[in-house]
Image 1 (cartoon, rainbow, N blue to C red):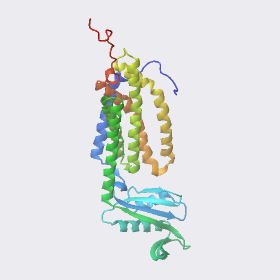
Image 2: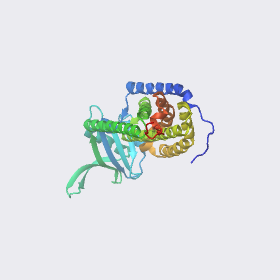
Image 3: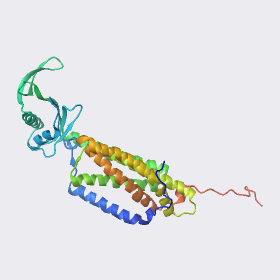
Image 4: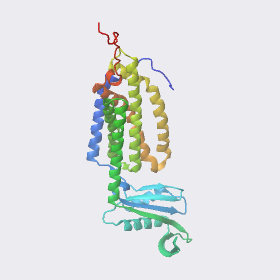
Length: 340
């Protein structure tokens, strides 16, 4: 399927050096920001408190964030889940304050924001036992804010998640190398990995520079970008191999330019449709999906760039040639082995 067909090949490889210098400078800048301003990790990685609350009325997330900022939480993660009455809080560790004390302070603050009062009430557990618990009651005696669940994420759990995330990233990279080396040739595998790492580091650089929160959902977006970028590279590499068979007299530059030009229409359709879906998450998904969509948007844009100007150019500079992808046909001995 094509929206349009470009009759004359665009000389992408003529300008490959310029675009790769730009890529290298962007990559170095991203590494500098990661070193100078480390990632703003979420509670899953650093440890902290996760609270689930249920409000009597529909929740006002901005009001909750303002209340939490008033007691020292600079960037509290407040998201709704389930219904409009349910709220999840992810709060970082506060120095000099235990997780239990922090959760109690937060609950008391939010109760006051709803003009409620904390009281000890007698409740019956699932096992039929009478348990005393603190509840936030309004003037009418109804429970204005109910504390559904409190979880404490320790630093050990955060370290384990970090290690698992790094392992997942490494497994994806190794899998991509093996797949491309088997399907094409090792030069394409190296070129694709350089392009993919370029995309990942630049996404991380954006998050470090703007100090956006890096959570498990963002990590999932980065893994998705890796697969998405590899798919684009595979399409171009496959067209390069096909052109090597068709264009016997063309140079390597001309073959690569023709391959990229012939896939432009497909790239616009695929990435355009994907980006429309991502933009809907970015604009309508709320705080829960915001940074997930941001990471995908950055990854899609740089994934197109790296597949065209980085992966293809690196493969060319590594010396890819027709013989790497197409085995030469041995000429049949006309004498059929007879000795004259």
